[in-house]
Length: 272
Image (cartoon, rainbow, N blue to C red; front, side, top):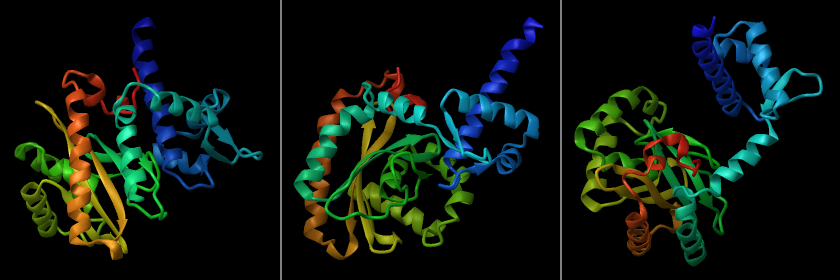
């Protein structure tokens, strides 16, 4: 019996995390038990038991009628504690604040999470703009959007091709981003040292991003601006790229390539 406990415990934890991910990615109205059972491929009894346990611990909230589940307030508390830790987000917050205050633009901090790019911080500027990732915690496949593209472009060539091969099916969900176009954007990003979107992915919204790199590890994150495309000009691009490069130059020396927070996506917000 003892020999089976670790495996069973790990399986239960995996299922609980999967359900949390599904609820997080669901609608604002919450997820029903039926939908969660189907998406997690769990039987009703098992799914219901895990959901109730998560709710008892404050990880999930249930509607009064118990039909829908939403993320619980305890996750907000844990997330706030993680964000205040000594991770990449904490290190970059002063830069995000300066860039936002000096430019009036929305500033974004994206980090690599395996084959994805996740928004781990953003400071909204004078204009409230729609972005590909939405709020903090939103993600896109690597290659979609300037923050993501700036990381993908500066990976080692063989690693970049492996990521692209895995991501093509998901990138296909963005009709404006064909294979030929993405490869052209990668070449342009490598050539100019920054990624630029003039408003083709989200109509009316442009973006500029510069990668944050660690010696022997490559890109781990990116710093960028989100801008109204109607306001974009050559002079603005030049000025904003320089501002981003200056901030990145002050951040990178403080990044230790042996720091597991930079190589473990689940610790990118600062968990110990």
